[in-house]
Image (cartoon, rainbow, N blue to C red; front, side):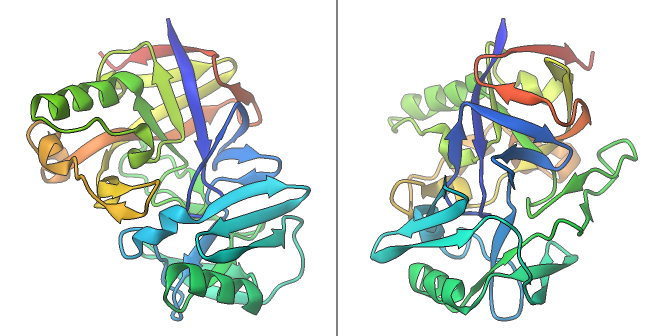
Length: 280
């Protein structure tokens, strides 16, 4: 029997995730205590988004939801908190993967905190409730699904057996196993075969239905140790030997990007049964 073994959401894009026992499923991804996945994003002075690809130390910025606030901590910095409740804020045009969003700026004090934590001038912005950003439709069967500041899709799914398979190959090469957080999924499913998620037509969890739509091409982030913010060891050379996808110009892929097709508003819980329908 397949089960939902892990739920992770990332309040601030490319910063540390929060593993939770329960989350609300929305069309735009997971939501916890009214906070959505990738609701905040760090941008440079020109409004372009920043990630661990350029600043690996972003992995060390740890968000927590405490008493109606988003509390942030990072090595060498005092903790910093911002209110979760929306308030009037100046807006700033920001760019993410060719999309432009008029985002809410989180103020100079928060910008100064992130600048110190990352080591480069930057600001924090928030996705406004009234804004809309849509997935592309070439992989979704023509469906434009909403998302926030995720790279492209509301959810990332990985099977636990897929990580185990990769770690077996790393062990055979004399290398250490790597944890799932290197790949930053939202949903981890146990009890399915290695890479079975690649061939799933849909996953049903209670009244919710999730459709895997596109393999996730991997950038350099899986090479970054999420506990130290330091690159290495890098699994991509091992993955290159068996995880290239011809339909994506031989990109190395691991995990499946997903959209929500039914059950928005449902509560997902770790341990729930997952019914997987294969596409063949």
